[in-house]
Length: 175
Image: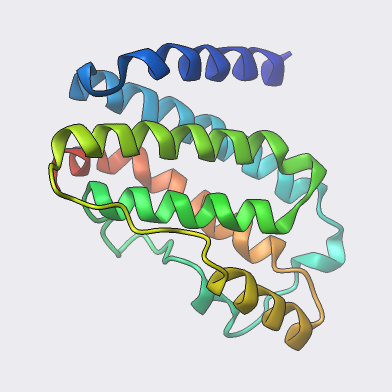
């Protein structure tokens, strides 16, 4: 029931945001981002729980591929948040797990809302292109090298980032 309600609300938020775009206030954008981040944390936790127990091994060095999730590292301004969400969206698509399909949609929705906000607030700021093959190649190499799925590390890093994002929503005002 909780998942159904969260899915309904996130879908409605996505629909309402499509027409609003640049006219949204900072408070509305913060509220949407906070809600989506909390929803994505829940879905990430569920994804982690569904992984086989053997995939919860710690792999030294693999963390270097993913944006930092440490609590002592600050979240950057709006362009950094957009870039990080784009990275995780592409990463979730690469993982291609059936249980993560809604998480991919949530990441896409958040990225789209943040890109719209950035276009209206940061004139002349060009969005970096995400998903040009570099990430996919690095992940394929790491899967070959380590022989294990990168899913546990990726989901834990995403969860760490999403846990911190609602605490740093003031960063949405900085280009």
